[in-house]
Image (cartoon, rainbow, N blue to C red; front, side, top):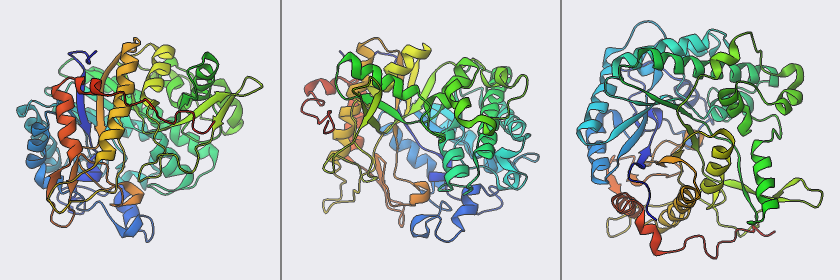
Length: 466
């Protein structure tokens, strides 16, 4: 079985991670990541996104590379302070023009632009007014979204509101590992979370109202996912329960995002956990948050393995020390996409789009001038085979976006992690398509049929040492 003819094959990237030119006042205002990059020790090695991959000046070359790899779609993001240096008010025409040129170049190359409206580069000017803690923050975002939609919706039909609130709220406002680097108490974290959910809902309404073409709208959340230790119904049900359970006060619980957006209510177990420190819900908020979306996007890199314990409850199975791991030290869990998409589809009956999936490999340009990354090819073969299996079982998966088209600035890890299908030499800015890039091209052109040559899940240590 090959993938459906209308299945979308793409790659993804984010503005701050690749564009650069963030320190030129003529081009953009500062984001919270610019702010945090100036803080000693915040980013590994003192790396910054000020230049990154210089995509701002090299986008035409990058689009040509995408075309050469037969990409059907490219998930890009708009840098909010590049368009609105103060977050609101006066538009930076040069910044908006860049995104118009980028979209036009993609369309000319036969690549459909899927636009993410927020991928973590929050304007410092608005952070100084309270950022996501300010009750006006969702209106600020809606006004920005209206501007972008009015400019691009004659050419763009697929939109993502927010990328990974669990990271920009959970890591940015709870643990402090990401920008803006805050470590707040649960009450304030949930205030920021609730305002971000309101921003999502208002963005959906804004896109629907002002889009010049019929729009397809989703978001790109991330959360801790789970796979069953075995194919037994008991372990499958345990993994399903674990996925949708509120386990702790972190923002990486799937239901803390999915239930408000798709069901119009926060999960009861989460409200009970937080008590008086829960989200500040006002009348009408949940109606705004639960605006109808067209698909569930999900960013998935790895999962925990779960089995049913002797008392009938979900139990996480520990991975042994010799278990396969990526350069980021994330466990390689090949069936993550299969089971996560299945559980989400069964619960919410919405089409699924895999909006990010990939791995970091410590690869480099070899003596022959090429970049050989067999681990990435193996990883993608195994994970995408899980997508194929889910489709075979009736899950409505509409597309897959590999992360990332090119190596880039990996947030607090700086340039120490390489996720790209294209290698970037950050000194010379030379691009080199990796072996995995050519493999992905063949995968797209074969509509996934090259996966049929092997059984990539055979002999995998799926029991995780259970």
